[in-house]
Length: 409
View 1 (cartoon, rainbow, N blue to C red):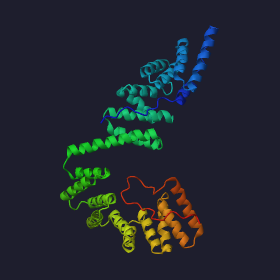
View 2: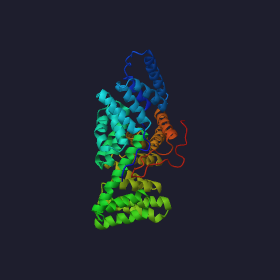
View 3: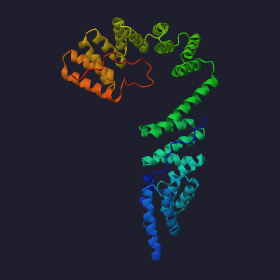
View 4: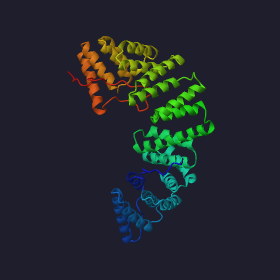
């Protein structure tokens, strides 16, 4: 799967162009006063057009300036940057080479040459310049642009591992940049596709392939196909850890979609089967606790939550679940500690803060109750519902009927 051209590509920005112009020296005075006046006029008008984002007009001015002073490398460099902005990559390369011939060490030009060559799909020639720009440039925008073009270059050259490594570095450097997130996400998806295709070609009937099929079908909510795939895994390896748990999750998801009681019973059976294979599977025991909680079996739910927490003291959702059970059984004093612990583990869990506010109110701790309800209201107003990762593999704790409607008082 070939990585396509960067659809949201942002050419060399006006800020970068102006940075190049900052390096532009005063143009040497000629013997002709009229030439000097023309040079000053073209330079001033070119700068103004560039600052306003009027790139064709800026190019016309600097082209005239270049005719008057072909010996000035910075004028060629500025024209190259404008040509890049206008997507005239052939012209940009020509101007860059002219500038480098006059002044080989002019800043940024090697990166700009790499970007221009990459846009022409000359990846072999572009690659060393892009790598240098990405690894060594002190300018964040130059580094970012070189990194994005490296994704294209590496993928087009079949160097998928290098593309993934660069994508990881880009995510660390620009964690909130939507363009970076979009293109690195495509790289990760592309690499996953390549690896899974290789798995299919190498071992199409293996446990690993069947498990991958089950997980893919589960993600696509094709529950029937996922169940078949997971059962095939168990036919090959009946004691394989994690598979009964995954089956339980699929049956539970299908129950919530179709509301068939048999699916709920099958889910509980699979979670218990998982605990037989792997007694330390806290997720399976947690799901049994949640199912008991939803069915109003507070004694069973409490027992299961407590067993999870004894083995995994920082299992945040279990702490929140136990706190909810203790509130139901009118034991708020005992609910405070697990709920406080939960809010420290995950300060963005609105359910934990709400239940903590109720526990603190019940024990008469007004200041703590108001602080907790304020946190709940802040989270609830910005992210309605329970804030959870989309890939979370356990059932999240949720606000029950009537919860979350009380005021600060």
